[in-house]
Each structure stands twice: as C-alpha cells, then as structure tokens.
Length: 345
Image (cartoon, rainbow, N blue to C red):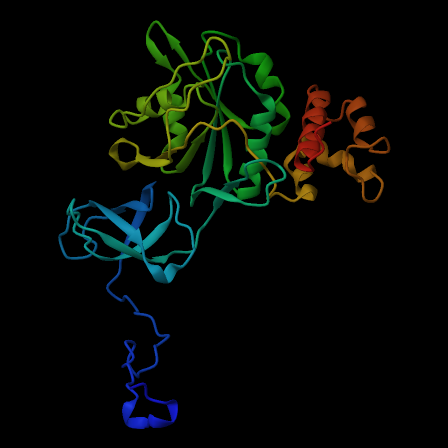
C-alpha cells in the first residue's frame, strides 16, 4: 500500500552526515619555516629542476639537484628559470623524490616578450639576469638588425646590460654591420671558426664572469655552439640552416641555466626565436632606448609620435648630430614604433 505524504513524520527522515565535518575551513597557511632556498635552472611540463646549495637544508649536505612541483598556495603565479624559490618536502636530491615550491623570492629583474606587437599577454622568459647576450650571425643566416633593435629595447626596459655577439665572422666582415650600433656604444664580441679553432670564445667568457647572462637569438646563428664551447658538459643540440629558406631549425625547446666552469657565472640558453613582440613596452619609452636620437626630440611638437611630417628628428639626422648611422637608426626606430603600434603598412 502506498503511503501518503501526511503519513510521514520526522522519525522517517534520514540525514546524511556531512563529509566536510562541522569545523569551518581555516584560511591560515603553513609558515614553512623549514623551507630550503634554491635556484630554478630548468622548467619542463610542470616540473622544476632546482639547484640547492651545499650545506643548505641540513648540516654538511652537498650541493644537489632537486625535482619540484609548484605548491597549490602559489596559485597561478608563474615560475621561470632564474627564479629564487623556497622548497619543502624531499630536498635531498633523491632522483625519485619530489619537493614543493612554496615561496617565490621577489625578482630583481624580468625579461619579457609577447608573441607579437599587439598581443596583450606577456611571456616571462627568465628572471634575475643582469645581462642579455644577443647572438646574431654575420652570414648564413643573414643578420636581422630589426630583431637586434627589439632585443636591445627589451634589454633596456628590463634593466639588463646588452652584449652583442656576432658569429661566423669567417664568412663576412663585421665592420659595416657594427657601424649601425656604434652610436649606442653597445659592447660587442666577434667570433669566428678559424684554423686555430673557435676564435673569440675567450673574450666572450671574460664578459660572462660573475654574471647571470641570457643568450637569445634566431635559430641557426650559432647560439648553442657558443654555449657548448663555454660549458663543455652542456651538450646543447646544434641546428643547421635550411639551404632553401635560410632559416635555422629550432633545437632547444626550453630555457636552461648552465653554470660556467669553476662556478664563475651562469649562462641561460633559450630556444631560438623568430619574433620578439614588445606589446609590454610603453610606446613613449621606446625613444629612450635610442639615446643617439632622443636628444633631437626636444624640438618635436607636443604629442609627436616621431613618425610624422612635423617630427624634428628628420632635421636632427640631416644635420649630422645623430652620427653617421643616424639615417638607418631613425628608420629602425620608426619601423619599431609602427610594428609596436600595430601599423604594418
């Protein structure tokens, strides 16, 4: 017989116990007072390779490599090569162990780029570096001055010292190319493959001592060859240039920090890039990174974009005050401003 609703009373009702319990969830987070400091030297699909120094995390512990994951309490905060972090969990260096990154130390510098000049999403390449090494070949593939200008702007914007490294000087002369950057007083190193071996590597090493240097450049320019010469145990894959397109093949899939022999500095090798967006850089600041031209803007009309008929930079360059490379530098600046503003005429 079917019971009517009025036939039920409170004794017929069963209450399912709550799985969460009766205590409210605490917003307090663990202090992690025993967290161990480390340096992120590689990132691969959600796993972080962290170097923990000798003696840290226990008296007498040797220097060791620790594999870690990001703790949930860090939320969406990104972690990149060069970050100083703090770890808990298995920090012994056990290859089967896993630690957790629970804190990210404030960054001293950040090198960013965007996919293109209209993309609002910033991509952090590395952190805490103090030098950007811009590698370009003088031939095979041909140098790309616009790419170099973009890297220079990114370096100045991030507070990094730029260093221009020209490879394959055995295939083409470097003097004409360097003349375009003489007004900027950018430091440079010229390398070549000669009868006596790799020339210029020792001079490059001297510029890297006691510094954290980021290497960036197109595929095929010899970046990984330089890294392998500086850090013999690096074994970075070396690409070749396509005879038809003149472009290099991507050989490095992610950034990695490598310590120079005898611990005299760090080299961060990055994947080859084909574009370097500057959407994160304020248009008004780009002119500041062309000091050979900036002085000429004092006569510009208010609100000048430096790419219009009334711009005073044309007269400044024509007078010779911007130096022998003034015309090409002004062209480079204006191409950069157009690309940054999305004007690709």
